[in-house]
Structures are given as C-alpha cells and as structure tokens.
Image 1: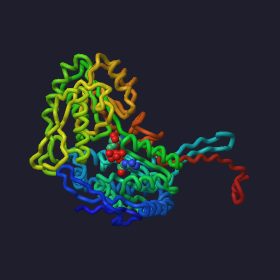
Image 2 (image 1 turned 90 degrees about the horizontal axis):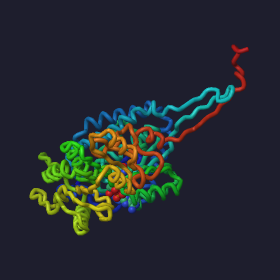
Image 3 (image 1 turned 30 degrees about the vertical axis):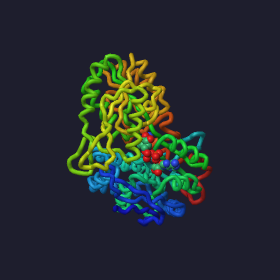
Image 4 (image 1 turned 60 degrees about the vertical axis):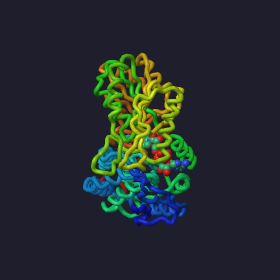
Length: 492
Ligand code: NAD
C-alpha cells in the first residue's frame, strides 16, 4: 500500500482521520488509503502557510523563481516515475499521462518568468512633480482544490504561479488520486522550498468547507464539476475570498461537408476518447453538417470501433484505459442505456467489454450514440466517459445555434476547408476556447484556461497573465517630494 501522508509545515505526517480507498482503475485493486482529513489538520496547514508567508513574501522574486527552476529540473529527472504513478492511480495511458505531466511542467516554465510578469507600471508627472506607480503584491494563503482527471496538471496550474508571486499555498488534491500530487510536492521540497510555503491536506467536503471559510485563507482556486464549482464560488466569495472556479463542460465539434474525412475523424476521436473521455475539454458531441454524414461519419464510426480498451499499468499499452471507479463506470453505462431508451442509435458499442487480464478493472469501450436529440439525458448531462454523441444539422447556422444553447462554455471546434465558415464559427460560438481543424484545444500555459458560462465562476482564469493577476493585488502609490531634504548639501 503506498503511503498517503499530509504535508504540513514541511513535515510529512500520517493523518489520524478515517480513510477512503484509492484504486488502480486498471485492476480494481486498492493501492492506497487517502485520509478524509480533519478540522485540526486544516487549521494546522493554514497556520503553517500563514506563518511562512511573511518570509516568503519578502524573498526576492528571483530567488523564488530559482527554487522553481530547480523544481523543473527535478520534474524532468523524475518524469517517468511521475507518469507511472499518474497512470496507476488514474488509469489513463502512459502517453496520456506524459501529456498530463508535460502540460503541468509548462506552467512551471511560465512561472519562471515571474520576475518579468510581476513588474508594475509607472507614470511620471501624473501632475506636475507627482509620480504614480502600480505594483503587484501577493495575497497571503491561497488554497487549491483539484479534481481526479488531471492528477499532475491541475495542481500545477495553481501553486507554481501562486508561490512564484510570493503567496503560500494549501493544496487539497482529489481523494481519488492523491499520490501524484504527493510525489510532485516531494520534488518541490527537494528543490529547497522553505517549510510551510506549500502544504497538502487530504479529504472531502468537510475539509473543503473548512478551507472555504477559514479567516486566514485569502484566495481559492477550484477545478471540478459544475455544481461543486458553483458552490465553491458562492461560499468562498460570501466569506470574502477571491475565487476562480472551473466547472464541467459539454463541448461540440462541428464537421462541415467539406472537412477532410481522415483528419477530422482523427481529431474528433482524440477529442472524444482521449483519457477515456474524462476531460473537461472532451469533444463529447459531433455535429455532422449536411453531406458530412456520408463523407466523414462512416470513417469516424469505423475508426472508433477499432479503439482497443485495456489495462494501462503494464508495458503493452491499449489505445484507451479504464474510467476512474466502478461507480463511475456504472453511471456511464446507465447513461448509454438511457440514451438508447430515449431513441439514440448505438453505432459503436462499448458496453460489455471483457478484459480477461484485468476482470475487475473499470472498463467501458468507445461508444457512439447517433441521432441524439437535445432533449435526451445524454445530450444534457456531462457523461465524462468514452461516449460520443452524434447530432445532425443542415447548415453551419443551425450547428452554431445548437452548440450555443449549451449552458456550459469551455470549448468547441470546427473542421472545414472554408476560411469563411471557420471565421463565422470563431466569431459566433459561445465558449472560451475555440479549435479550427483541431480537436477541442485546452489552452497552453501562456494563455488563460478560458471557460465561459457554467464552465467557470469568477473573473480571472487560471494560467497565463490572468493567473498572475489572480494571485496578486495591486498597490498604487502616488508620490510628491517637496524638498531635497537636509544633508543634500550639493544642491542650492
Ligand atoms: P468533483 O467536483 O467531484 O471534485 C472536485 C474536487 O471537489 C475534489 O477535490 C473533491 O474532493 C471536492 N468535492 C467533491 N464533492 C464536494 C462537495 N460536496 N463539497 C466540497 N468539495 C467537494 O469533480 P471530479 O469528479 O473530481 O472531476 C471531474 C469534473 O471536473 C468534471 O465535471 C470535469 O469537467 C471537471 N473539470 C473541469 C476542468 C476545467 O478546467 N473546467 C478541468 C478538469 C476537470
């Protein structure tokens, strides 16, 4: 059993609270026990972060960044170990885990630029002899609460930027995948981060509520499902915290009649079935426009039927791994059945997958539900599994209108050879991350991770310059000097 300690004030401590099992989704075996945490542990972690803040705030940005530079080197050195740990507790393939870790490392690279990114603004002579400057200062103790689906990347969206800005941090990773977060934090400790600057507490609702309402916590970054994201935003802001809260999504991929069959099928398949569909940027609905029904859809179905699902915790890798838990697998299967009952036609069937090597793993094969209608449950709920809905529309206007009815707003893509169609789509689509001839694209570290509508609650997104703005507050100083003062003997 892999240990699952908390990290408080620079000490790795075994919690005394009850535990919840962490599974290897490929086999169904229990690999660790994650503490449910306690109020006392939350208080200790926040107190440690609060105590570490004054010295860390006053550490010159260039010295803070040097710790992160060492951290980045250690992440490279231990890359494959992190990848293996990630795959073992999450179930995604090794290739997908490498992507997960790399995307997180890019945020560390971005945070290495903090010395430039933190620079303020100055205007000389705002009035005669008066100058004005705006500088950015850290907030204090910041908190991160993260989901199961990107065990490496999502925590790394948060604390490297927060601590580069001079804040201290308490991370509460998902109780389903705590091990990768621990492994990565150990490298930051090894890089020389002072005690208490980063802390980790484990747990669920009780621990989250204690963090949300703690008087010494200044800011909350959350990533997870929409109902919880909304709750975090409401409770956090009510308690005076700055909050950025990313929710769930339902992303549309529009395939125009002139789209290249092979490239667009590949793009849709990667978007729909990458990480077994457990991505907030999953392209979970393909909107087939006009004759794309004949030119693209048959290839899409044929390639989907060939996707091999299987265990990811061994050398021979499948195309797609399991979903996170048995309960989640049952929910996905139930949503497929509901879709069929409500009139969808199954054209690639991932039900009833049997993996003789790993009979207790949580597998659902790649599934396509065709002729989905907006009223169906599968069209309305985020499935978060390897299920692609196919809907059909007569033209681009109708396809955009359909996508814009969604109350989510993370991403959408179009496949077309027409610049005009792409331009119209980009201009009119109601979401924050747009793809043109590419599967629904998650923004890279230098750009905001830009959810709209019910996919995001708050004002400043994670990543990019908005991340720096979120973790700092501005101070504007206006100054005037009347005389040179005593001692300036050289001036007449
Ligand atoms: P989740 O909402 O169940 O859990 C997220 C975090 O909230 C976990 O740390 C969990 O312990 C905590 N939590 C769960 N229930 C809670 C409650 N009642 N009160 C307080 N805290 C609670 O999400 P998940 O299943 O871990 O992750 C999948 C979801 O995350 C999907 O909806 C996906 O779209 C979303 N997601 C969004 C983004 C984004 O950037 N928009 C990125 C990744 C995942």
